[in-house]
Amino acid sequence: MVIKILLPYDNMIPPAIVPIFVNTGVALLPMIVGALAGVAAVIFNPRELLRLCRRRPVVSMVVILGALVIWFCVPPLIAALRADKSFRRSGPNEIDWAKVALEILRSDQRVAVAASAFDSPSDTDPGQVMARIYRGSMSRDGYSGGDSPRGLVPVWEYEQDDTMYPSSPIVVGGAVYGASCLLDPPDTYGAIFCLDARTGAERWYTDVKDPDSDEEFRGFFSSPAVSADGRYLVIGQGMHFDEDCELVCLDAATGEVHWLIKTTLHIEGSPAIEGDIVVAGAGAIEVGDDQKAKGDPGFVMGVRLSDGEELWRYPLNDPESSPAVDNGVSYIGSGVNGSAVVALRTESDAQLEEEGLDRLIWKTPTPHPATGAITLTENLVLIGCGNSNYIFIAENPEGFVLALDRKTGKLLWQVPVPDAVLGAIAVRGNTAICPVRNGEVVAIDLSRSGEIIWRQQVSGSSPVLAGPAFTDELVYAVSQDGYLVVLDASDGSQIERHYVNAPGNPGELGLSVSSPFVVGGRVYVGSETGGLRCFAGTKGK
Image (cartoon, rainbow, N blue to C red; front, side, top):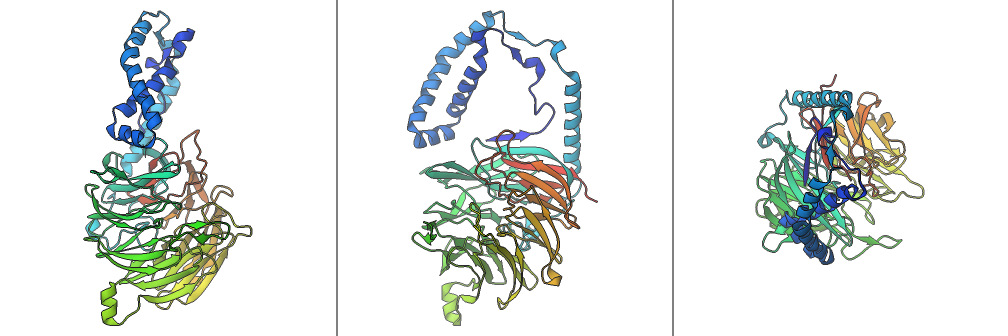
């Protein structure tokens, strides 16, 4: 794990300590030192060494041999270098002082911007918040108060080698909760963590289900939800091809596992919490050209938050959608082989039987698989659908934004868009901001049956798979090729853009799908190769 705070000299090596190598033997030193440092990093991190021995026994033997090399070879090497007259530090005439001064000024600007971002309260008290579901609320706007920052500069990065952050962070009471995924085919490995929102410092890190057995989590695509009292974090487990994954509940203060609900499937959607009830969907694993489900086609479950007792399961094809729960009713989309939206009662099986009620309230077919998150606003249920998915584009792509009556499920209107809407639709007031797989962000007017207000390409034709953050003044969207773009909410004009992947490592899997979260003048977002990042900016208009 690396927490990178962007302060003076952060992006350059101090010139006064850069050695110059002039003979062939000593020129090999950087490679030797780099290799030895990598070995030492594993040796002196027991968790990483144990993990390496378990996954890669051959590689672990190499690490042990490397330890012996460090023990026996480094002291003679250092002695030889001291005797070598060609080893010198660079002189003062070789320093570009203008460049150094410019970097210091830029760093001072970053620090000043970061400080000003917290002039206003960074967040509301979690005890005063009714819901802390995916994207922060049922309107999925990814915004929890404070200024709408622009002129963004990076403040800190949290990253681990070869680890992706497709999950979307959530910020509660000065803490950032996030999750990660490491691909090591045929397996995936994941971790859940809590960071200080100001500094990026790690508060806790959990990557095993049971410390005694040391059984590791699968990778996380799902995003965390935090209970209204701030006590518990709930998240789904597994990537799309993973089996035998669990719904996970942790103590939000310590990261200790509170309970696990086992499934034969995976949970890519993000759970919803209302009171003492958690609702999540376990999605199908489709195989072959016909995309038939392998094994269980999917189900929705209701679990008691306080003790992890499973209260009910309802069969539904591929519910990869992130549900929303309001007043005892859960709304969730059905994906491949389902193509529908359903409303389900959340009481236990015993309660419904006693009251003589069915779990299903209504079910409305959709033109294509409905895998996007459910957005609730006033009397509307909003969801996107389409015939493309996160990985593959359909031969004749098509998508829709659908508005359903919350009580009856009746389709009130639909807006056609060029491709699937897979990310969450963000709503503030009568405006909905919709991410589209063809690379557009589209603003629609809810008071005018979805009339399009504006549409804007984010990064050429690169898909927009993540849900945008929406603060009334600004929209923050992420493209699949790794750009965080700030748009004017009034007309969609592009104000600025920032690369979130690591320089020189753009990411080849197209998993820049983390949705940004805005609070207290800062923007938090995950990436495929650049870690989980925090940006700060100046105040808005």
